[in-house]
Image (cartoon, each protein chain N blue to C red):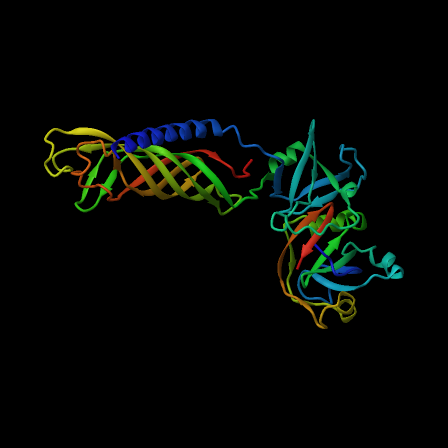
Length: 258
Length: 121
């Protein structure tokens, strides 16, 4: 059993390290297939073909709230089109006999209008998120105590963004990390006299609110000492949850924010 | 996916003096003689209706719609019906729907399939 725990601990440590490195590497791995925008102001535009050649001199005003794909930027001009494939009905295609692929309506707007009148539109309300969280202070109950047994680790979960405009999102996260646990006379029921630090594997769960890239949340978890540790059985918080405030920084998120 | 029926219609959209609210004002079976006059107006478009699993789908071809109508009615995420729309009897018959079939008011997603504009009611 002790040998198993030793191997398990090494495996977990390796996994945590790997996830941390993967998360750091992950910030550049978000691939964007296309860019979706929304007009915040009415915007003048002109019909064009897919290469940006103006087809009509009639000016058309795009309404506020209309969403479009950016097809191409050519110098100071942008080629856009409005129709968006449905995510909801992706699996329920009609397979119509004739298609209008050659008939897409493309429009020209200036780059300045794209910059000042449109903003990236968030198509994905829910997204996978991966990051790291530090819990600098832990509150323990039964018996009540607080300590600086910090945990550092990787978290992953689902992130919900309510609005395209407000930079606020909420996440439900699962985490795993490594904790530094203080063992002393109090926490080991008097078994040891001198204060020691021990490593523990810490699975946790929590919710987090995110403003921009800064995150704050509430977490709870369990510090699991190695069964090799001579104080394993005397640790009074064995299998007892702690509560903590988590501070985080989102490293990677598979949302469609551009 | 089997479409039971597709019919061509002329559709008058938007808020009209004789219609309350925003959405579908008038729908009728397509008649060539009416098309020229009707489609002079920005809010009159040639479209198709289909039925899929007892739900009505509006299909609009991009080549059949004026740029201004397209931009005005089909560039947002949703097609808004401010009021319930009762399909005319002739359309119900053609689509093999019960007489008085009603499309309830609401917001319906506008999507695209192979360049066609689709609104599933």
